[in-house]
Amino acid sequence: MDRRELPSVLGAGAAGLVAFGGSAARAGTPSEEHEGYITIIGRRALVCNEAAHHCLEELK
Image 1 (cartoon, rainbow, N blue to C red):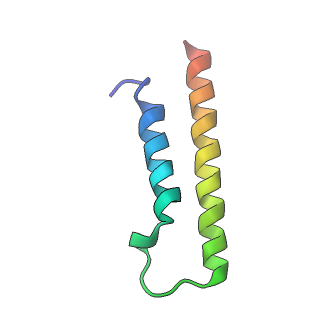
Image 2: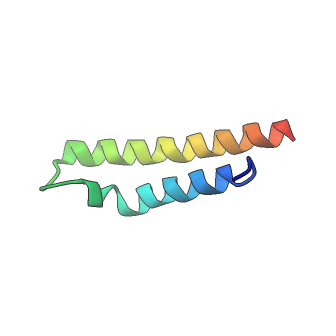
């Protein structure tokens, strides 16, 4: 894997986390508080992906 593939892989992982909300990793019924945390983590993963993509573009 080269550095150009990295944003795609990170983006796919972040999109998967957001789309499925981490439901496969949870056991039992989460509280509303946990749902909020999962949403925040998903948003931060997307921002991180955008930042990584920007930085990699600057290195070109």
